[in-house]
Image 1 (cartoon, rainbow, N blue to C red):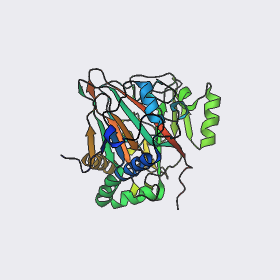
Image 2 (image 1 turned 90 degrees about the vertical axis):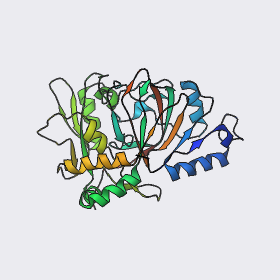
Image 3 (image 1 turned 180 degrees about the horizontal axis):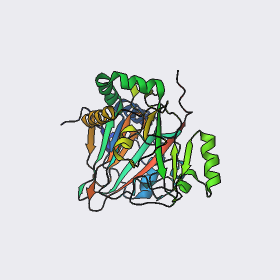
Amino acid sequence: MEAPFSLPEVTPRDLPNWHGGALPGRDQQRLEAWVQEFGGLLFRGFDVGDAHAFDRFIGAFGLANFPYSESFSNALRFNRTERVFTANEAPPSVEIFLHHEMAQTLVFPKRLFFFGETTAERGGETPLCRSDLTLRALEAAHPTFVQALREKGVRYRSTLPSDPDPASGQGRSWRATLRVDTPNAAEATLQALGYRWRWAKDHALTLQTPPLPAVLAFDQGPEVFFNQLLAAHAGWRRTEDAHWPLLAFGDQTPLPTTCLDDALAIAEDNTLNHAWRTGDIVFLDNTRMMHGRRPFEGSRSVLAALCEPQRRSAFKPA
């Protein structure tokens, strides 16, 4: 099925006045307008061959860096430079389902960069999904569900291991995720942020977020399906838990599985699969575009960077 949108391609010919260093103001304004309109851009044909060149390319945009070490993401990743890190260390057979980066946290990036360092022998595409189109179709199919998301927000349950787990898409330890060394320090951090938590016998940490918005509008743009519901429903650990559902409305009511299944299918109908070429750079508006990772064979390396951290409070029902 043909995707209902495309990712505009930018080449060096489109930026004749840029010769390294900071982007000229007029070019930067033009690129930013395109990102806001289309949700992302593909840069192809630029002389970017490694993590350091990718770092310099990002620096030309003048966007605030969001160090991965300061994020609340629980994906296992490794820094290549202060700004650039590996996208995800999960095994090639693991699919990373569509999501907005860190939409399950209180601080998330507004902009994302990805760099195709090494392409896979087979598979490994990055699915890109317009969240506004997805929301429009989902609301037509399940208006009551979408209204409940607006009115109640959502809570996420996840489990952080005591030690890094490279076999999981959620393998970052609670020590690294929370930037603490002791259980007492972890609890103090979670208490301050409004999280709930429980400790397991293997010293893993199960936590539940405060209520967070799931349908939002940014910068006077259209409403978007801004959340982690698809990735959590399809890909997060599905361990049984007598205390909290994996996904719940803000009032602790479990989210209906049928609606989540349909949301996955609707999102796929609004997805473009980006097949990487070595040297490709994808620039995304994280508030408009979801992304993921298809399984692959062979060696694949996609690097990433986060920009423009956005802080918010827990959701408060109207």
